[in-house]
Image (cartoon, rainbow, N blue to C red; front, side, top):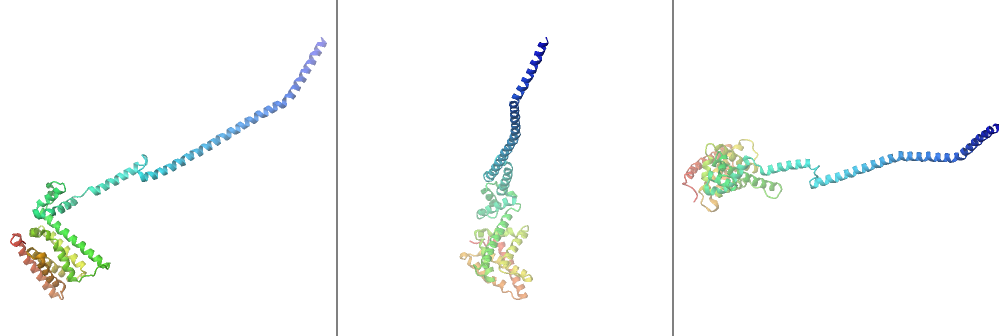
Length: 336
């Protein structure tokens, strides 16, 4: 029995020694495996820690590149939009502005005020004055040529008076343009300045020649101009005409000469106009001869007494011309 117990103890000792030997023999490999496992784990953790940041960095770069590309494309697209009309998104605001500008442009081109429309009708009506005279019928015919109803003549409260005054103002404006152009040529050295008498004579003749297309029916226009409600407008046109003639003639007087010169030239203009109505000479030569003789009275004014006398003579001639005008109104002295 004692031998059996001793054998069991020896077996335990041997088994213990065997396990220790096995552990010592296996420990290097286990350590190596364990170290390899930990190293792989660390590498994986390290790679995992690197990969997200790398992936995030690459994602950020890709996102930034996409944004830059989008921005470049947007800039390119915006440039193209500016030249070609824009994309659907960026075009909305420019379309509104363009549409507004186009609409305003169309309004400037197509929309006209009542005054502008009246101006067009009056200008068109002048073509029918030789046929219908200075009448509302001429206004109606002019309106119809513009595609308007003849009822549009109702906008002219003064009727034929508006037509005559429009013609007078239009002729005065034409003369002013001519005189201004001549003055410009003189300043540029392209033309020689005229003497005052010659300048005034040519200016009056140029203005009166504008009446020739309507000379046979001009007495009717004169009778309309001297109607009480038209006299203020007639005098205003006449005063403006005299001012322009004297201004471009070089007159800068600020004393009484300013009034006497204009009054004298007014008388000469009116009397020459009346002479034209009865002139039967070729190209109205008698009228221009009369003008040549009378224009010197305005230029050769020396003293105050002579100025008053010349002015009085001019006004007297105007009164005599008024009597002739009354005869012309009745058709007794019309040019044949």
